[in-house]
View 1 (spheres, helix red, strand yellow):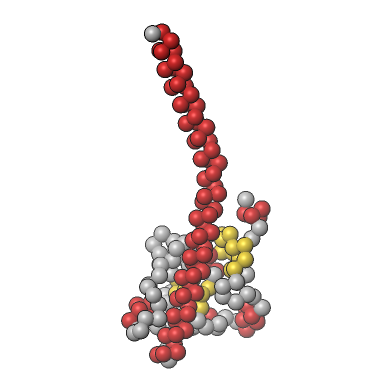
View 2 (view 1 turned 60 degrees about the horizontal axis):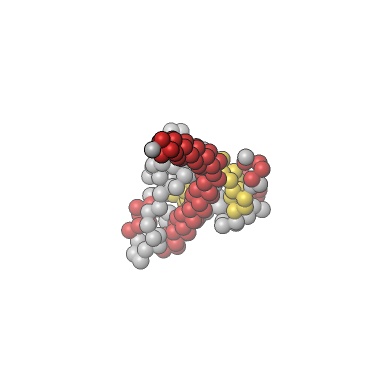
Length: 175
């Protein structure tokens, strides 16, 4: 009988050691899982943003005016937007609306016709989309002349990749 008791202690120590090793391996794998989730959210942001910009283009072609909010787009029959997409980069899912005219001194864009959306997230991205590295700088627009953009800004953006052309930054610069 004494041999059985000593073996129980050895088995317990072995199980504890295996749990510690597995925990260390999981900690090493966690950063790559976080990066993969961020990459998938970026792809979803691009998909949703471009879908909304395309729906605004179709809305303008049909109604000859820009919508005041995304709910107006959802009322059009047949549907030009599958669903009222949320921003995947923020917890509340709210988009910042882009308008063709400058908002007032308060910065309130409510009631102004929207020509596009962008994320409210101030975080750095892994991808470079339209030459921009911050999510809030990724603009998804049905109109090139955003917020009374200056002529030199418009000329500068003409040479940038069109919507859908996202490139990945080197992982060395992000790690």
